[in-house]
Amino acid sequence: MQFDAKLNDYLTNANLYFLLAKKYEYVDPQKHMYFYQKHFYYAEMVDKLYMQMEGNMGEQYNVMPNKYNTMY
Image (cartoon, rainbow, N blue to C red; front, top):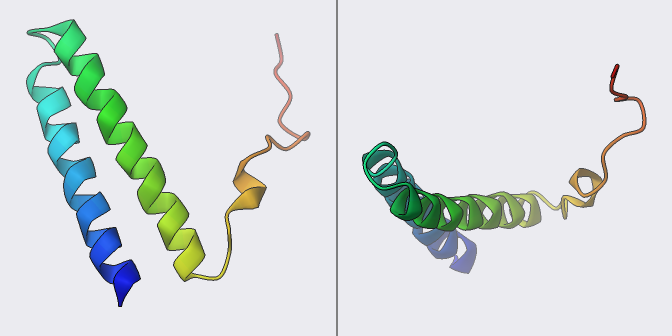
């Protein structure tokens, strides 16, 4: 199925960019942020695709529930 191939690609890319971000975390902050942002993008794509596969578009995650108020 097409979803399985896309999911595999997104998971592979998310993992690769996470490892690269960790490699540069204390060595080069600019590279760390570059790779972390790419990791975050692919992690979001994994979440969206997974929600589509499960029949749930994930729209409930776009809004923060009102019951979580800050105490400050």
